[in-house]
Length: 171
Ligand SMILES: [Zn+2]
Image 1 (cartoon, rainbow, N blue to C red):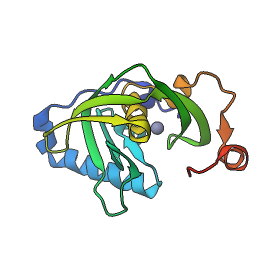
Image 2: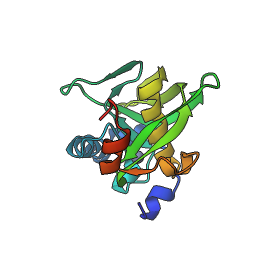
Image 3: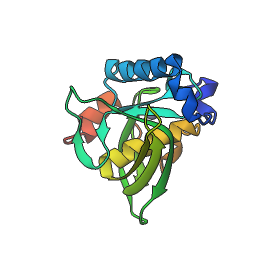
Image 4: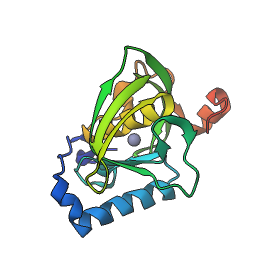
């Protein structure tokens, strides 16, 4: 946090750009970085690349996290449409804001369209945890951090205090 690229709207990618080896390498690097830091998602601006890509270790329609060997999903130029008006508050953290957790309201259910890493079409609905990850990561592409989305900072916690006072099951 503090690097200007994290606060800048990332640019859209053309489908043809995905054929460039450098772009495929960037995606592989993002997946490696996400795994290295035990994240569930990572957006390109978090490694200082201002392009609209995020990777996420989720199955969009499934609350369960991916099995360790499963390929993470790659979303390019994602567009989110909330379905319904339900908002849910839950805990979020961010690799760009280490050691903090806070409760953030997000749409419970969304539709997301995007390209995959080969330019194929993604069009899925998602709810609850994976929908939260998709909203958090898409925010990064618009220069928005989870702190911006909190209703108040009353739940903002260091990891140690989160684990001690707030954590029930997740983490
Ligand atoms: Zn983040």
